[in-house]
Length: 382
Image (cartoon, rainbow, N blue to C red; front, side):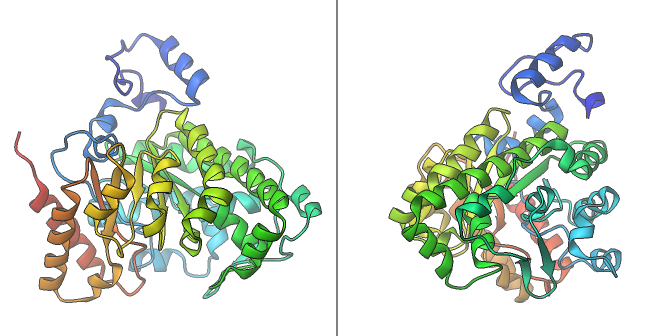
């Protein structure tokens, strides 16, 4: 990354001389990274994050790194998910695959939200067809001692992979990501995926002090994991709160928002745009916007114009094509893409995406066509 930042223009700043090494050093001391290179900062994705004018609506897909790609499945043959996430060569290749095929406007770092938990010593595995499974679910104050702070040396494969990707991606920005404290806590308390989150809510309501202590430790871990990615060269980050939609707005504000807000604030010190996303969060959108992200992701259940009104004028929106639409015929896909673009045009900034992740059975050719449609129909003059 260093060879790309010698003449970089800091966001909102002025060009620097290539012989001014002190500026990069000062920037790293304050934010943990060198300024974002001008070729990235001026691209459509980062401009949309900042609610600035763009040449076209940028597009990327959640779970674009793999899932539906045959080259991904071939590369992963005989290799477990966690091993894939902890090998820098595989992380690099899987992150690049959808960029080569679909020509999206941003890459998403290939990893899993439980990777930092494993890195600090939590016993868990990702079981095929099930998801993360915790060896010993959390439920007492003693369990907090199993969550030490994350250090950069805990995830050397992340730093190595992002360093390589920064050179490979060129003008395509890389999005780092992490799980939000509530979703991580839910996995730890439930012991794995849950439809009801009953144990999580029981702890939340019954032992609020323990709950907040747990989320505080998880916020420390998530923030550190994101800052490692930014320091290595990520140009933006996304905080996933996949299960937040299981809560009422009042409960979200009481038990969740303070911890997500802390993560977003600490990463905000790096200067990179922050995206916040959850599923089933229609009634939570105002509170999610207040948590401090620059962009709020919206699932397919809420029209983007409605979502933007709820979030407010100081946030861009991301989304929100229903992933199942991609299984329909070409005419239907084109109609829905046009509808999302028209709806997103009313927001102060719009990043086109799905309302959740790419379904494994999606035809990769359809994803490529969606990117083409978004670029064609949203292109601006000038």
